[in-house]
Image (cartoon, rainbow, N blue to C red; front, side, top):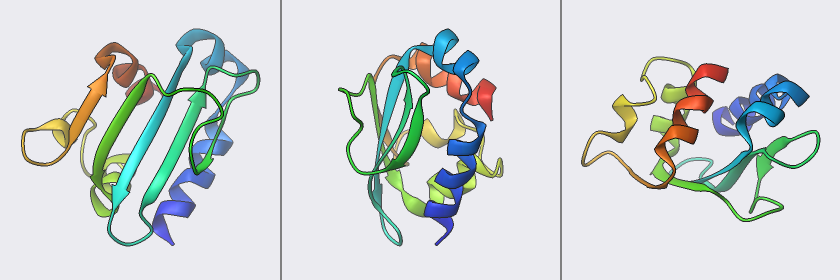
Length: 104
């Protein structure tokens, strides 16, 4: 599905350099089609992204619909727009969130 495809793209975009410069782990709680718990690990050596809980504790946890997540990552919905009240919730370090936007 679109969510899995998006994470495949993200996984391919993760580089050692991003991991070194970001040092953050993002967890996504997605509702709807293809939802569930997903993560982007920009802290462990080599980094990674995929389905399930991150290998280490998340620094940022974002909750949103899977449709919004896919839109966000396909750039139809800018990252910060996704955090407008009502759409989703973010707990954790917002500066790290901005570093993910740079990666996209």
